[in-house]
Image (cartoon, rainbow, N blue to C red):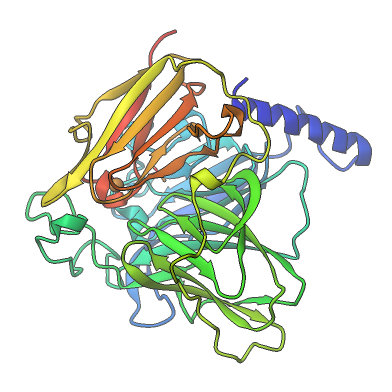
Length: 469
Ligand code: C2O
Ligand code: CU
C-alpha cells in the first residue's frame, strides 16, 4: 500500500476510535465541512522592520501570507484571486494533491490571469509542516508564500508552545528580488552567482536581508519561554536561494520531523535547511537566559537571520549568539530514520533514472542531464512502479531537488528500506551522489526541479510523466 493511503487509513481508524471514545470527532465518511480560505495575490508595500518600505507581492496584504492550519483529512477549498498585473498560481509544496490542483503553470493548469480567480480543492493529508507558494516566474522571491500546517487527525500534545517560522531571503527594493536590484558582479561564475547578461536567465540577486516571518532581527517577535517549557518549532525555508545552518545558543535542537514526516527524535547542535525543506525541532528550556537562534548561510558565513529566545526575567538582556565552531554536530540525512516503519517494496526499481546536475562555472544555465526545461527529458513511469532517481551533482553548488505530487525515500544502505527518510525535497551536495525512490501512485505530469528558484528558472527542471499501465 502506498504511504499516503496507508497513513490515511491508519489515521481514519484512529479518528474512528477517538470518535467512538469521545463522541467529539466527525465520523469519517461523513465529510466535515470544507475549510475555506481566500487568498488575494496583490502588490503591497511592505517593511521588514527597518529600512525603506518597498513594493513586493503579498497574499491578503501580508508576506508571509496567512498560516493555513487544518486537521489531517480535512477538505480544503482555497480561492485564489489574482489582483496582480501578471498571471499567478499556487503550489502546495510537499502535499501530494491531485494533479490538476498542483499549481504549476503550463503543466497542471493555465496560470490565472490578472483579475481572475481559481479554486483549489483537495484533502489535506498526510499531517505535517508544508507551505504554499506561487509557482509562476520569480513570484516566490517577491513574497508570495505562506505556511500550511496539517495537524494529525488525533491530536498529539506535549509542547507548551509551538511556533511556525518561515525563513526568507530578501532584496529590499521594489520588485523584491527582480527588477532594479543590484546583482552579483559578472564572472562570479564559480559560485553560480554571476550575472547572466542580456537575454540569459536571471541570476540570483544579492540578498540584503534574511527575515523570519517577514521581520529582520531584531524587529521580529522574540520567543518567550519559561524554564521547563518544551517548545516545538516548525521551520520552513521559503527562501529562493539560501540554505541555512541553524543553531540555538545554549541549547540543542531535537529533530522531530523532516519535510513534515516524523523521524526518530535525535538532538543536534546544528540543523541544515535548504530551500523548500521543512524541519520540526523541539528544545527544552533548561538553560535560563537570553539566547539567539541564528542561521548561517551554509557556504557563505553569517546570514543575520535570527530569532531571540528570551526566558522570563531575561527579557532585557542582550541575547547570546551561537558560536559556530568546528566540531558541532550537524543533522544529516544519514543520522535520521523514519519514526515508524513505512512500507517500501523490496527488490529492484522498475524505472531507474540518472539525473546529472550541472551548471555554474561561468554558464548562466543549470541543467539536468545537460538539458534545459522545457526542452528537458520526461521521466516516464507506470502506475505502481518503484522509481529510482540517482542524482549526480557535477557542480560546485548544492541543489535541493524537489518532486511534486509524491514523497520519496532517501536510499540509505545502513537502514532497512521501511526506515528510509520520507521527504519531498533533498539536498544533493556539490560533487556528491544521492539516490531517492518513490512509488508512482499519483497519476499526472509532475514537475521535478531544483528548488533554488534561479536554478529552476535557468533550466534545472523536468517532468515525471505517467504512461498507461
Ligand atoms: Cu516549492 Cu515546484 O515547488
Ligand atoms: Cu540548484
